[in-house]
Amino acid sequence: MQEDLIDNFMKIREVNMMRLKEAKENGKKVVGIYCTYCPQELILATGAIPVGLCGTKEEPIAAAEEVLPRNLCPLIKSSFGFALTDTCPFFHFSDVVIGETTCDGKKKMFEIMNDIKPVHVMQLPHLKNTKASFDLWVAELNRLKSFLEQELEVKINDEDIWNAIEIVNRETAAAKAVCDLNQMDPPLLTGLDLLTVTWSRGFTTDKGDAADMLNRLTETLDSTQRSISTGKPRILLTGCPVGLGTEKVIGLVQELGANVVAMENCSGYKTLELQTSSQYEDPIVALAHKYLSIPCSCMSPNPYRIDLLNQMIENFRADAVIDLTWQACHTYNIEAHTVGKLVKEKGLPYLHLESDYSSSDLESLKVRIEAMLEMVEK
Amino acid sequence: MIGMGIDIGSVATKGVLVNNNSRYQVILPTGWSPREAGEAVISALLGQSSLERQEIHHIYATGYGRVAFNQADKTVTEIKCHARGIAELYSEVRTIIDIGGQDSKVIQINELGKVLDFAMNDKCAAGTGRFLQVMAVALGMDVSELGQAEIPEQKQAINSMCTVFAESEIIGLLARGHDKGGVIAGLHQSVGKRVAAMAKRMGIKEKVAFTGGVAMNPGVKRALQEELDCEVMVPHICQYTGALGAALLACE
Image (tube, rainbow over all chains, first blue to last red; front, side):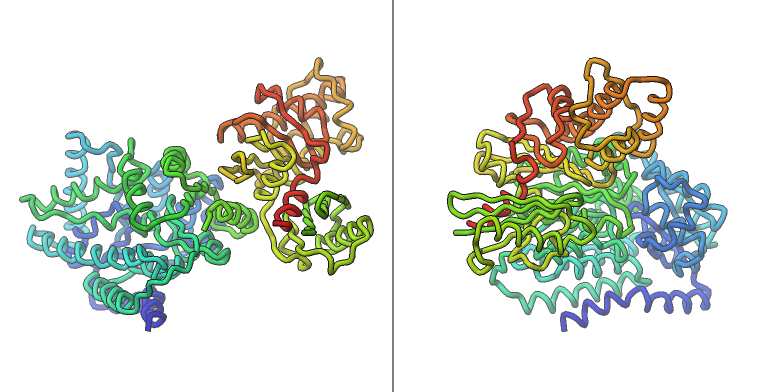
């Protein structure tokens, strides 16, 4: 039963590719997104389908390097490579693509990607809690709204946005409930299962369906809960985004007899506590508050990530923390210093890994992870 | 308890056998087959100690070749083995710097020899034994001669961090008539700087021990002391520290 449910998530990409094709044939619009900063609610409010785009596989990187510099983060190269080689069906079906100025690499890559497909780039402020940056972000949300209205030839009204907010809130809460099951010892989901579920949900064409699928998984797993501790080390993974295709660290942890019980990364827990509040009159303001709260390393300073990690280490009873930086991701690489300090102060082993999408460093990653696990006394 | 530790490195395979108070040690080149090198070391240790294979309670393997080796009861990482080995040799050491053939690492330990933190470099040859090996070839020398040949007073700074570029840099320096001894001192400084930076990032807690094959080179030891501004202790069996740790763990 559990395997079947996980398998359904595994199939999401495939199933939704077909749904997307049908929807397009029926005149539906598709908007491709890359990042958790993209306010999906506005896209949903137009009646279009927001879909996550590929960027977690090694294959298209060589093609991307014909245009982009080699020493760029693999996520940017992979995203661009998929677009360039037209091998991401979700990109293929997208009418427009939304990007954000999270980091320098992405910002400049989007300028070139615009030659392939229209890319609307939102100017993301990197400072939270000041009036100027908040106002800028509200203005950027309104600019996106106008862009979508014009490109997709629709009018977005507040009620549509509030309806979309309700659906996204529901789907986020459902995803959080699945992840929270792993607070139990032993965890109910292996690291790879957890990744399959949280990463795949980004490719669903219907957020309501996704919420239902997630809730069904929670109910099923919850009713089969066990309470005997296996004594396997519990690892918290943080750092750059991870997806299927780049799960090597999670796989190695599992192979070495431990478990990734929680992931703070973008596709994981980073955004799952964020709910858009209905206490504001203007839905755009409500959305602005939510999205500016995302604890991404592109924010400066970024104390909320440290708070979140601190709380996750407690709640998920982590024995050690692995911080994964993709090569040339400066913000996560530098922030590792602060994360390391927190983890060490809590008396836990901390392992900072720098890697790319290739499998060339599997052995050296393995010895580091193994040595860290030896430090965990169970 | 009789335990054996086999440390299969990229260049050499080291073995230590611990039988209560007696200790035996063997070193052989790893060559192309880590497995055969490991087996040869076991036979040599048995020969030295006049023990039979069945009398050994446990064999623990470590080093990069540990995965390919199937004669061990258990594999342990180099990091844990070096920590255990040093704790046995020098109880006052808190930081271990290990420079081997293809990687370098810094390990922080507590008074019990438990690993508190570690950092490792194996993505690039700079700061490893391989770097010195390549340079020795360019200088027409054996790597074991470098330590004695340096002239620290005439140290010539090597600017390239990359092994490939450093090789052309020293060829250029020699062509311009720079003294070999000064160039060698510069090479040692380059290794010392690279590894010291990794150690400083973690934080140096004295005392510091230096292990691995490169620790036999007094020039690198001198450079490390200069860069870290503290005394660096080199055990007389610096190449065997990992194997000793593995053997001691096998006895526990």
